[in-house]
Length: 261
Image (cartoon, rainbow, N blue to C red; front, side, top):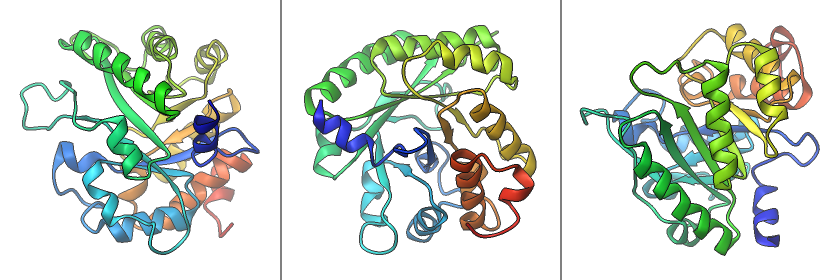
């Protein structure tokens, strides 16, 4: 397991045991969206802000950060679907662990929607990815959400179910929805043996976003995996710096936004 341990140090902060991850896989799903038009620029801003890692699809690694600027962990997303599909929750594998290794990845990620019509296929795919990750010593981030007809996406019971499924599959790191309540979140993360980070969700105000992240960290959460709430800011670099301060230094939101690190 030493290979996995070495790689995960490029994703998780060894001092806090937490992480700030900025996923940038949204273009596959939504097309040419704001914030992800100039990928080289956005990746540079995120890395300069202090993020621990980013998430990319395999074809965009060449537009990344490795040739200049501050280094940053690279997680390659293996799942994909598009908003043009009548069921955008229908995630399929579009990359392999072996391809990610060849591209220099420090980790891989997959997407599972519990409650979606094709849940069984996503779970089957996940099991295969876990086997490959264990074989090659590759850390696995499982992005798992309660999604489907009549499913409450932030109910503690369904979020907790997602976390348990990901842990039992063999995830090294789990991303899911924040329940919105530190008490219920603490119960969920304390029952899990691997770090659980919250998703950023739809774009919200600076203070609102940072307060939710701070609450989750105080309750024992492992950090954040924030996409649009980071790369669609007017000043991405400064906002990611604020994320760093909240997650790794537990700064109050107003203090985190007030100046440089």
